[in-house]
Image (cartoon, rainbow, N blue to C red; front, side, top):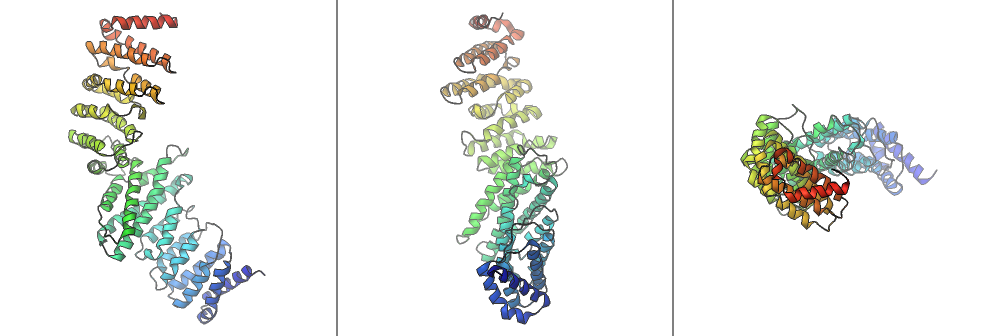
Length: 510
């Protein structure tokens, strides 16, 4: 028998003594067996580990002698097992919740950190109600590191789990978020215990929010259907309120760990909000959510959170919600927020904004016209390569033709952007995006604006000379200019007609 095998037998024997309540014998040999386990790290099968775990927890719950619990916990702590899942884990978690209220609970601190590491906390929907109860326990701080381990490593690949199981994980996450929110008023700046308690609960929630964020970012590319679970984490108002409340906390200088956790947590809330799923109809109060979005616009400090808020503003077509979110004041608040936050040239915000404006144009066209000048002042200089402008411009043409005319009067801003991109890697895409976006403008333009349109389409087409887009741009320009025929043929300048004829002759067309 090897040394390791001998220690395995001795650890098993020690736990049998615990079952038989032979405390005197445990006190006699327990410390030595614990040291031997530390030196040799005996390996066990999952069933053996779970049996020993249950024995120890039962003893702790029964209030057994502290020295006995100490020696047996030490031996169990250094016992090794391969990664495993086990049907009894939900029952074990419930026992841990019971044991936390007992005098022997401090012995679980290191024991659980070590033994939770190889345990798989997924694969059984019965795990999550038990884990939710454990996270909410008043004495959960005793096993803070173990719960950090579970929440930080178990739920980072949720897209690989069944939809029903992810839904249960998100129910647990939301329950813990509500608990943290309710706990915030209990925090006392400068109080060590209060600070540690809040730091721990924020840490566990931070881990759960990070897992939810990764899941939400993967939804569009997961190749898997999740009809139920996204709705369980679609709680924008709760996350926004939590973010604002936590960000407003003022820890004392000595509370450095809490300060660092607050920053991490606020970042996680921001990330989650930027990919927050749309709440299911009837599952939330859309008007209350809309009020939270407006508040978020006024306090936005970064482009990620603002981008997430803009996405969520398109969640409802309820009349009251639309009236609230897209009033003149609300839209001007949005514009100020966009101007206020720092942005990169490739910021996702530039992709979302025209989509949101298209949504407004489809649902509240008068709202766009009410802020038309400020909208165009903000929108026109935005980088064309970040989002296809055509869908928004088409809606503008059809729903708000007066605004479309104002847009056309400022279109030289786009021309300048296109020319400044020449020689760069995005030149062709920017040129095509601009040309393609304005093809339908004759539907809104009149008289001299139609002449200007024809000249500009010819000029933009010529900017594509020598590029891979040359023929495409010429064809698009000719089709667009021909649409002026149905409006007012006399508005097509002679030089433009000659240019069209030359292009058709070159192509062998009439």
